[in-house]
Length: 209
Image (tube, rainbow, N blue to C red):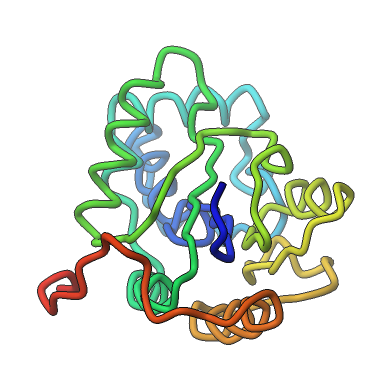
């Protein structure tokens, strides 16, 4: 049993810029200018003229053929804040629904771990699950409206990571990772005195590049 304060951290839209990465893949696949695809301000990809089936097929190709999860941009300050939180004794539990499309699981899992290593992201465990409310955490940080609603309906505390498509959600909100850090530390302090670091994590200066 983990005694530390556990934060359940989503990847896409919270740590990784999925929309930018997916835009590149869609533009390549459709042979169009990436700039012709407008910003996503609503959940889903109707604004790009994609049906749900279109999206699933393009997502599959993006993962399988273009290695989407290996090359996504990292959101600003993500790794620095996660290291500071980890040093403060907070247990980082990554929770992601990346095993979404059949026949891409091996590539998705490998590319996810490679991306985490490449970007020096600290974590104690990782859960590939769609039903995020079934994964234990004291606090979650999430961008997808349906996941936020499901987590809250199950009685969990959730920080909404600010994105254009989740502006209708109320409650705790972080516009960036620096704001998320303040909220997480405050919640952790309410839960338990924060320790200096988790055992087993190197604090060498070389861990961040």
